[in-house]
Structures are given as C-alpha cells and as structure tokens.
Length: 161
Image (cartoon, rainbow, N blue to C red; front, top):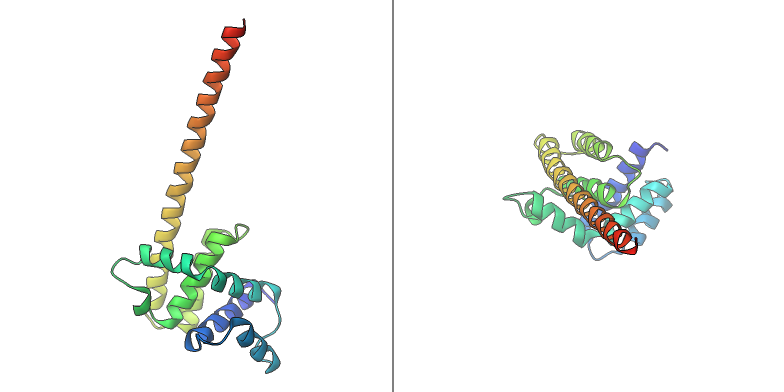
C-alpha cells in the first residue's frame, strides 16, 4: 500500500470517528478491517491513532491558524484532513511538511467540497510558517547560548593563564 493510500485509510477512519464519537477508535478500525473496508496497514493505523491521541493539541493548532473559524464550523471532511496533515507535520518528522500539505490538498480534491482544498492549503501554509518561525527562533536562541558559552570558556581560559 502506498503512503497516499494509507493516508486515505487514516482519513476514512477519522472521518467515520467524527460521526461516532462515543465508539472507541480501535473498535472502528476493527469493524472496518473485519468487513474488509480497510486493509491493515501500519502507517495508516499509526497515523489515525497518533492523530486521535494528539487531538487536543492538533485542534489547538487548527484554532490558532484558522482565523475566524472555530473547529466546530469546519466541515468534517476538511477537519479530518487537517488533523491528519497537522499530525504528520508535528509528530512524524520523516515526512516533509510540503508532502503533508500536498497530500492533504489532494485528499480534499478527492473527498471534499470545492472550497475545502484552498481552505486546507491556507491553514496548513499558516501552520508551516508558524512552525518555521518557531524553529528559527529556537535556532537563534541556541546560537546565542553557544556564543555565551564560548565567551565564558574564553574568560576562564584567560584567567587560568
């Protein structure tokens, strides 16, 4: 199974979960596998579980980056796709951010309404830029700390001489 197919399966699981919030995720997975609606795939199941396990943090990121939109107002299709993509972006570092965004847009084109693809692309772009700013800030702080440590080492070296 390709990664694209695995993402589709993970999307299907989360989309179904949105209609059955009281049903445990593993029960939804098990029923779909038993009825041969899904194939067992490590990446698909791992992505669906990781998304569900980190749902609160992921939804906070969506709220922060979807200006003027509450999570409850976003279509179930777009929301499931956003959640998957943000999960990949935040918790699966081996998947490039650009791939997560592109795959999310493709899922929207296949399963969503006409407005979903640009909406999802915009939010994910905002998430990506915010994440990049945070990484740049951390790198800058780390660089400053290293420079301070070098200065301290130089001062101590001078005092020893």
